[in-house]
Length: 149
Image 1 (cartoon, one colour):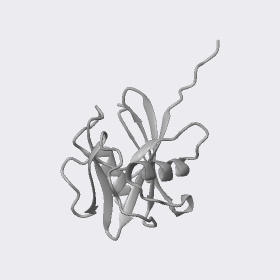
Image 2 (cartoon, helix red, strand yellow):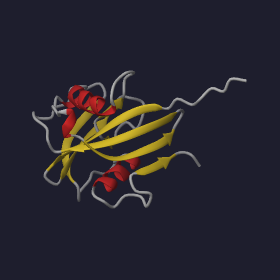
Image 3 (cartoon, helix red, strand yellow):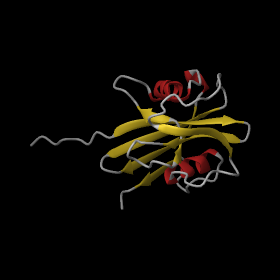
Image 4 (tube, one colour):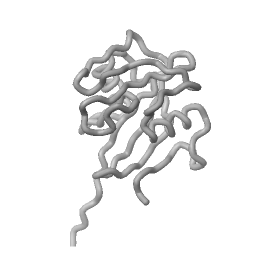
């Protein structure tokens, strides 16, 4: 008997910092967590490195430019919604450009928030990733999960 192995989706998330602030965008018209604040992010394409995906997605969504070697790994999450997803969170403060909304059909807000004054309506698992970034994350270190029990 041949066993099908689970193939989770892989996504890269961008924790872009400016001083003690983090860049967040408000989801809009996507059908998933609309009206909530999240990070620039997206799926890793077939044949693409996760760090390359972070740079590509950030540019597509905000026009900010980040060299691949400027990203640092923060944490990973394995979550289950209607499918299995592995999310990789990367951070940088080495970007160029001014952020702007480049996908107005998916986002209606984009701004830097102080880490000690995050907005209401922050996506829950994004808050956990930010906790990992500032060193107060889950007791399991740089890995956490959601939706499995």
